[in-house]
Length: 128
Image (cartoon, rainbow, N blue to C red; front, top):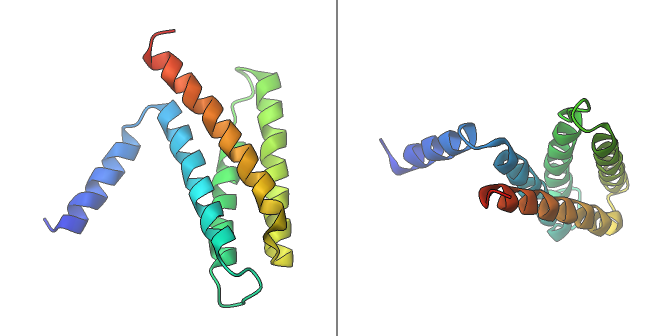
């Protein structure tokens, strides 16, 4: 097995066997990483990867939104859905206008949600 194949297998297995809270945290980290990559691009340059990275971040946020389980905590789910819709809307606007000015607000929302999910994961690991 070549090193890249072994790495790919390890990554796939670590994702498939991760607990749900860790998966959610990984999704937020991925969305933030893609958002940062988009913000580092020259948005107005048609050859830049701005739209590509923003589209990847948007896909993660959309997946988080459609995966909400409203029956467990309807109020929390509704609030999360509104935050996700805000993020999706701002990312779509940035893509359409090729203007990253709305993206820091999206990043702030996603970072705060990541912090919240991380604190839940830490409390669970401590048995609280």
